[in-house]
Image 1 (cartoon, rainbow, N blue to C red):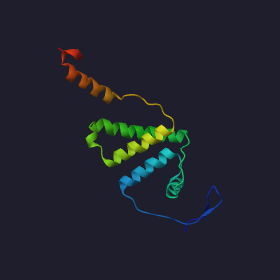
Image 2: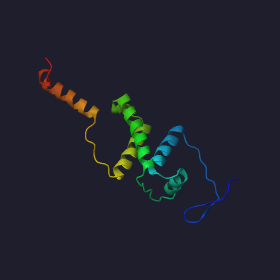
Image 3: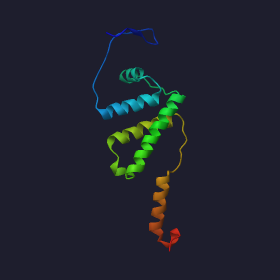
Image 4: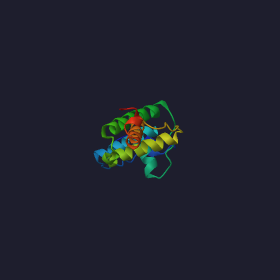
Amino acid sequence: MSDKNLDDAGRWRSKTVAFRVSPEEAGLIDAQVAMSGLTKQDYITKRLLARDVVVVPSSRVQRALQREAVRIYCELRRIRDAGDIGPELQARIDIFARTFEALGAEDPGRSDVEEEDAAIARMSRGGANEGGFD
């Protein structure tokens, strides 16, 4: 049996609550925990008790956001067609976007892929010569 622990409010945490999740759900939970800056126990407890999870910017949160941004960016570069985005990736993107937005991040503007798609669209509307090609 594990030792009793005191939480920040001085309460004994002597009960264990466990449940099973799929690998995809575990990945989403881990991503949310990392971006919150909280421990997994504190994050899950706050969410289950419908308490606000306040993300405090720190180097730990910044690293988690960077790791998640790289994961999302690599996956988006791989699929490129939004029709191929699965529910797990969509959930990760939503989590990342909400966290990033809540931290007051500025809109980065259009991505390289969006710029490329716009250039292709301009070329197809205006003909080959307008894009600088003969």
